[in-house]
Length: 318
Image 1 (cartoon, rainbow, N blue to C red):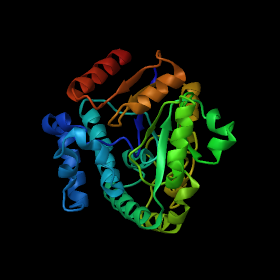
Image 2 (spheres, helix red, strand yellow; image 1 turned 45 degrees about the vertical axis):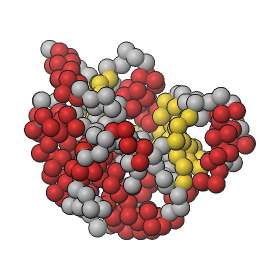
Image 3 (cartoon, rainbow, N blue to C red; image 1 turned 180 degrees about the vertical axis):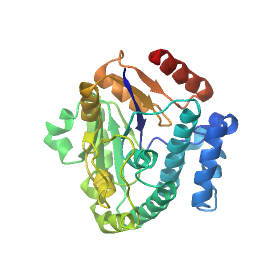
Image 4 (cartoon, rainbow, N blue to C red; image 1 turned 180 degrees about the horizontal axis):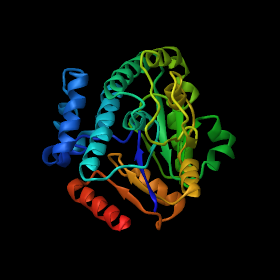
């Protein structure tokens, strides 16, 4: 029987109204999200509930405050898991991507929800105060595009390798316009992400000291489930205070992680992110025949999506 892997995404996946149907109509989701909101209290004069659900989706390009969106994404991932659990859907393993590695740690029991939210709130504030602004750009091409071009490699750093034809780079703000022009000249499709700091690159180095300091204040436990890391492209043996800094700073290898997971045994992937992007990366890497399900997307009807996952997994176990 195939094992079920829950996937958790990171920064850039946020948008206003993400999960609103579940929040309004799914008791388990709402209770979990409200619990997260109670933990963090007001953020810039808004509750976490107001932050996510009180502004229209069309304004999401401006939904980019690091502290606000990190907390919202953690709450969304945690609440999605609780909604799935209420339907009898439980993971056999967990896999995180960037901020999603923290969500996976929470779901595994390695880190308490309150501790995790306090930690990422403090770390987000520290990054905003200490790191320079930067641009993160998703590119539809092979990472070899950067590796084989001296011009492009001087303008940016590879931050995330997501699939054979999708990766992310981080660039100093002063290089953004030239990088965009170079990509356009090569007729390469790209999109700037709503992330204003240089995660997964040397542009984050100024934030290292304080980032790790906040992690020293939390207590890590042994995960109750196997947890896999996009940083390591492998299973995590345990957590320490430096791990989440390494995740924030290091290059992510989600493509390699997916290949390794599938190579070890048959898997069923359930994308718990608000966009379903990780599910797309899985299919791009392994092919459309691999069982992959999306819990949420930007188009709504998430109650229907949840029911589809429940039905599909029940049939798989029969």
